[in-house]
Image (cartoon, rainbow, N blue to C red):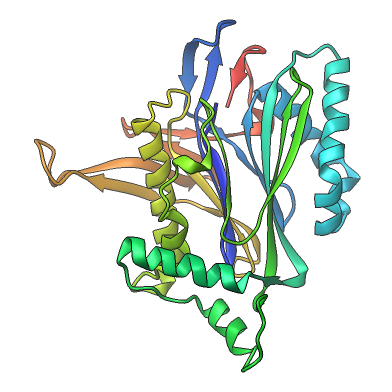
Length: 322
C-alpha cells in the first residue's frame, strides 16, 4: 500500500507519492516489490489525482475517468458528482467478476472561476502555534498579505486572496466492506492514505507550518524547499514506521495559479549524516528526472528506470497493490 497525500496551501496544492508497487500473496505477505510506478495522474490542465490501493481497481477507475464526460464539468460539479460516479464504476467493476478491493483517489483541482478564500481566525491561530512550537521566524506569503491588505480596515474573517482557488478532496472505496467515503481538505489541512491504518496524525505537527509560514531565503526556491521537505517526510515515515510497501523515489505535482494548472516537479534529494562512519557523505534518497520525454527514476545503484503511469501499469495478478 502506498503512502500518498495532498496538502492544501494558500497558493497551491501538492500531491505526493512514493513509487513502490507490491505483489502480495493471499495472506497479505509481500512476494516482491518494484519501485517503478507513477501514482500521480494529470487528468486535465487543472486537475490531477494521486492513487493508492489495488492496481486493478485503480486502472479501471482511471481509464474510465479519462473517457468520461465528467472531465468536461466545472470544478464544483466534478467535486459534487465524483463520489457517486466512482460508486457506479465500482459496481460495474464487481459485476464483471473482479475481486473486492480497496483504493483511494486524492484529487487536486485549480478552480479558475473564483479566488481562494481562507479562514482568517484559523490562519492567525495556526501561525501563532507554529511560531510558538518551532521558535522559527514567521513570514507571510505575498498572496495572503495582499488579501489581508485589500480588506483595509474592515473586519473580514474570510479574506479573499488574489489567486485562483484550489480544491483538495478524496474518495476512498472499499468494495469488500461496501464502503464509499469522500473527504475535503480546506486550507491548512491535508489528506493522507497509507498502509497499516496510517493517518495524518503521524505527520509532524510543524509540517504544514513550515510550508505555509516559513519562507526560504530565496523565494524562487520555495517549491524546491517544499518538495525537499515533503520527500524527507515520506522517506522518514517509510523508515521509522517500517512501511515495507512504501519505497523508491518520491514524486510530486504542484497544482496552482503560479504553475498555470498542473505541473510535474522533478528533483534529486540528498541527506547527510552528521555523526557515525558516514558523517558528511551525501546519500541520495530520491531522484526523478525526464529522459527522452519520459519520467524516470534513478535507484540507489545509479540505474535509471522509466516510471510507468498507474493506468498503464502491468499488474501481474489480482494481488498487486500500490
